[in-house]
Image 1 (cartoon, rainbow, N blue to C red):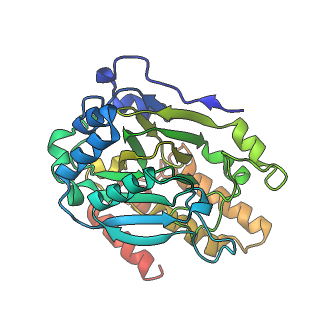
Image 2: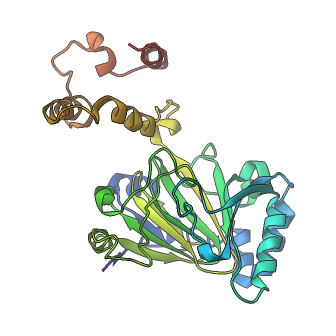
Image 3: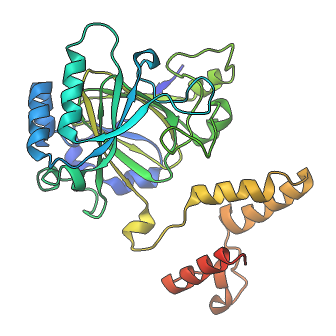
Length: 335
């Protein structure tokens, strides 16, 4: 029902991120980070990986989620959709790995444990000097994710994402943005980890309850990554991530091109939520009229201000930092 994610065919040392950005499609780069010391340790054993991480750990507390055994490692909601199915706490990275090691020695069902989005510079500062990502500037800060057999349901990121498996194996199931109607997405403003997630189970589909999921799966792209492998995901691609071993770790990099150029970015998801307030309750003809204006001024390929002298284009022209700040203030003051 699904197809494999395309893979970079040449030596990973020849990988050019600019080419992937230009293509705008997900891409697996096998062995991109095969020389990382943590990857080499993970290939020898989980124990060596944990020891190598502990040597870098400064003890700073990081966010950890604990799901009960009956959740089967899936990060999500409780049955009533008025809360989440996990406990949240903070511990050091080494303590989290020690708990994972204890679970791996336990017979039967164990809790799911997920260390979430820890800034490496704050918890494993020595990592940065010995684990380079040459295709990105150092201003793009890596984050650490670790856990046992945990599943993060399909969600999207607004930023570009380069994800590297450092230990264990992960299965990524990706869906194009246009599959949103077939993924049964939960609330935008109340989600387990900040990003709206699917309420369906692409890995265990229930087509009676979620019949449109069949169409989503027909458009899905799938890849399993091992230590040292990387996956580039463009913004707004839905992705479900399944960790497949008793110990799994991933390092990812989020960025927007505007940030690399020194330009501030506006919160796009905030604009979507504001649009719900502004347009969702309007009559159909008015919604269509606003869609036409958005297509013209925001999403169209043609320059909507080509007929206006460059110095008089205002918000339709190129905005310097001062003009961007003034526009934000105008929006905050209600226009």
